[in-house]
Length: 368
Image (cartoon, rainbow, N blue to C red; front, top):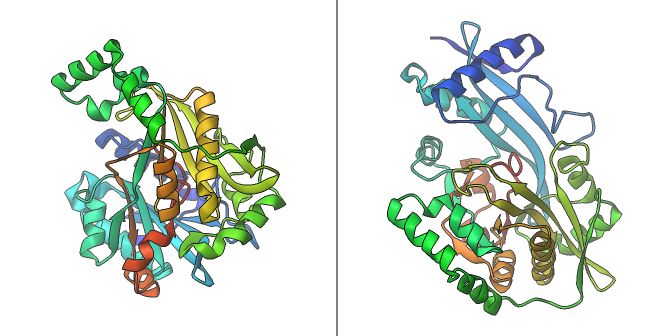
């Protein structure tokens, strides 16, 4: 087996299609590697600093593995650097013949961009996180928060908690008895809602977003550049995803913004058939974080969400979630930093609470 790693190209689209079919038939993955060599979401355009590249691993002309390398500027302290996001897939998931391919993909990507990170849903026991840990990457979880809007729908559909017959019976009893309303009441007691806050639904990010970025960027140890130009690339209106862009005001002052989704789930393995609201991305000064969370929460509740979820890493946003009555739950959202990136950020441990990482980072708001 002589693996050749090379950039994706048009003549290999049919091979990628066949690769996707093999992966889909052998695993539970719904992920599909792009068949076109040009990214639909983030194409490489002259002068643009945010873009994706696709690379393939070929065995005698047959695609056996692939990875996406996303380039994006990040603010790290006072320095702005382009770092890479890594998303691999290979037939090593189900064919022992290609078990070593995961390492080959990683080495190739690090050769192209040593300042690399990965974000993903799963657990530390999954194959990729285990490999990254063995390769001396730094891994930790991004905290998960949830707010129950409609207790009955939540109790009937929260599949994560309904995995045994006994639990299903107990949760259904709570739903039908009305005791689930106590959960809503408890949340209300914990919620501290700021006054004078409003949220405007906007079709795009304008110059006003630049002012929010300039006012708040110095408060974050590490964050993707979230100026208006970057946000227009990441959340552009023509992308076929129902992004809710909220411009949050404190009186007449722009306090921050949030990008949300409000998705009707269908027999999802975690959320059943709930209408799931999610705060995908957000930005503000630290003391305005609670205003953005309150405004986004109010909007999603009015829009019919049964449950609202988010992942937040920064201490100010975590505190804002607590003040808005959110519960903290077990997180399966992991971040991993390559050795070179970790070294660049040393001392890393005291900086982790200053990272601003959301579901909008990496390959975007997947699984929501």
